[in-house]
Image 1: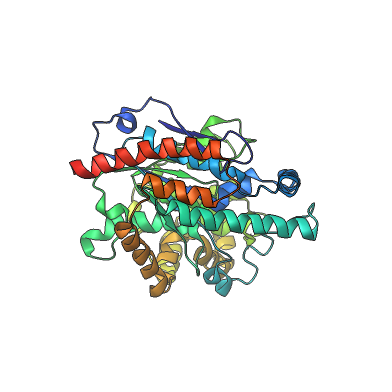
Image 2 (image 1 turned 120 degrees about the vertical axis):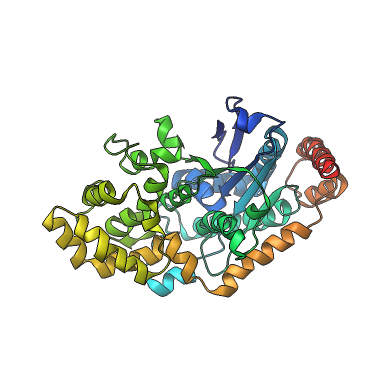
Length: 409
């Protein structure tokens, strides 16, 4: 099994390999191990307001805004060295999603508000975040087997689902993607966004790592797709493992659309949390859960038909059915906000093509030679010479491994 951990509040993420799963650790295996890292989500979880204040005090006194980069970069290089056939995909958001705001003006309206920070501290933090994001984009783009994706119109938690979907659509000649060219893959996703659980619809997804320091329950932190309902119901055994991982992933947007999602300011049906919503849908899952094809909708029209023809008639509790029916328009609007199947169909073509342009750039990119890598690091004057030497030694190993594999293929 692949485990992730973080060492200190300035590290985006540390990745540690425990040699337990031969399908991941065996160098003789042709399976590619793809690690998706949600940059914004991991940063925001590591830095609560108290840590932001502490961090701002540090960077203002030492004038060292990029100091976390060296440690974070070292840990990313460790992945490429330690994990056989590793690919790292980092998705970075650059602002609010216009797609979501066109549907609901209040979407994520409370994001970026810091009660404890002064206006000056808030601006310093945002400036720091922007600098790290831009440096990471420029730096990581030229590392071997590392891709950096972002969209201007759309938030980036959608990208892993989209790339996996394209992998399964390649026979239909839909779009190219990074994952479509890899034959056998294991996918590991590092993000605490509940939306991400939808990616478990694809069997390649093996584990989610949720970077929340307060979590003590290992099943909630290093979770398999079969633990989705266990996590969403806050550790209740009710329904956990009763349904396949594919069905658990499929029901996630239904639960979020009915109960809402306070972290994204998505309003659900009043009085219905996820646990109650799951109680509502149990009859539906019991009747149709063995037939995952019923979740192969792509449009709001098809989804409305699923609700009216299959979901509502399957509910034995008349009051539950009435509640869903009365709020169906709200529920369908929420699906447009959280449901990756709907979003895949609704996104403008130019935004989807942008991901393919990024993929083509990834294929044609020229990776850093060790000397180019050193030169880039020296431009970041806040990284100390000792750290640069350590990074250069590590990167030289990564580069030699990359060129050897490229020569063998």
